[in-house]
Length: 112
Image 1 (cartoon, helix red, strand yellow):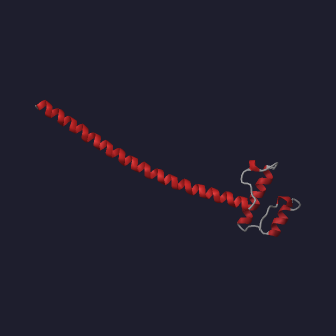
Image 2: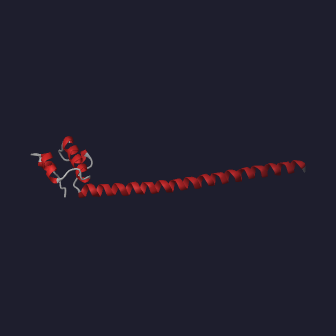
Image 3: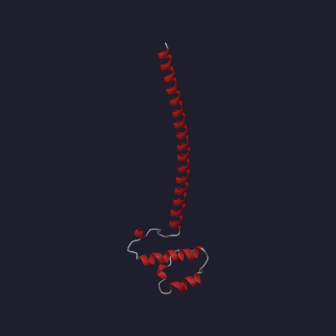
């Protein structure tokens, strides 16, 4: 009888250990689920910012990637981006823009 009682106590101890491990795993899963939801929210914010940037670049007729330019030179692309930055920050006006570009006014893209 004592042997049976010892065996039952051993099984009870194992069962309690399994319950505590299960509880710890559920807590860990809950934490990982919360982290996953947070990362999905961050990803959604990044996607929204990307869509906004793409929409603004299409609206301003600016190609963000040099590879998307057809037969374009890298220097022209960088100059366009620099002028767009200056224009967006109000650091340059239309007359200064014309003086800056001079005879190369073909670089002037639609700025209004």
